[in-house]
Amino acid sequence: MMPDTALETLLRRDRTVIAASVATLVALAWIYILWLATTMDMGGMVTPEAGMDADTPMGDGMEMGSEGQADLEKLIGVSPRPWTAVDAAFTLTMWMVMMVGMMLPSATPMILLYARVGRQSRGDGKPFATTGFFAGGYLLAWTGFSLAATLGQWLIDGALLTPALASASRVFSGVVLVVAGLYQWTPLKDACLRQCQAPIVFLQNHGGFRRDPRGAVALGFRHGLYCVGCCWALMTLLFVVGVMNVLWIAVIAVFVLVEKLLPTGGVLSRAAGAVLVVFGLWQLFAAAL
Image (cartoon, rainbow, N blue to C red; front, side):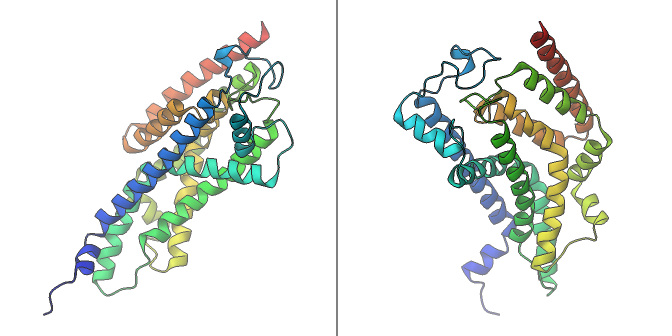
C-alpha cells in the first residue's frame, strides 16, 4: 500500500480545514466591518450624540465633513444625492459582508455536521458534494436578505436615517423596536429557531443530505431561509442603533449565536422581545410628548 500523500492526509482532516476556512471568512468580514466603521469615524461623521436632535431629518444644519467623508458617504449610499447603481452595489456589499461576519458563526455547527457525514459517505465510495456548496447555499439566502436591507436603506435614506446610518426619528425607532420585539413571540420565530437549533432534526425533516452540488446548494439555501426567518427582525435593529455601529453588530451576532446554541434559546428570545417592546413603547411615548 502506497503511503498517503500530504494532500490525502489533509483531506481526511476536512472538518478542521472547513472550520479554519469559516473562521478565516468571519475574520475577514470583521476586518472589513471595523475598517469601514473606523473610516467613517475618522472622516468626521456627525452623530446624534454629537449634537443632532433625534427627530431632526438628515441634512438640517449638518456639515459633510472632509472630502474623504463625502466620498465614503457616496460609497455606502448615504449621500443626499439620488442613489446610483454604484451606491447600491457598495451598500449591498456592505450588508453581505456584515451577514457573513454575523451569521456564519452560528451556522458553523450545521456546516461541520454536513462535513462529517459527507466524509463518511465519501469513505463508502459514494459521491459527495463539497461542504462549500452547502455553505454557499446558506449564504445565498442571506444575500437575499442583504438585497432587501439595501432596498430598505434606499427607501428611508435621507428621511429617517442620519449620516451615521442610525434612526433620525423616535417614531421610526419605536415602531422598529416594537415590531422586532413582538416578532420574538410569534410561532414563526419559534419554528425557525427550532430548525436552526437542531441540525439533525433539520436534515431529517428535509430528506437528509444531498451529495450532488445542486441538491447541496438547495439544502443550504433552505437552512439559510430558516435562519433569515429566525433573525431578520433582530437585523432591522441596526437601522435604529446604527448600521455601522460595531458594538451593536457584535451584540446582535453574539445574541444570535447564544440563542441558537442554548436549549433555552426560546426563553431568551422572548425575554429580549419583551425588552425591545418596552424600549419601543418608551420611544413612541417620548415622541408624543
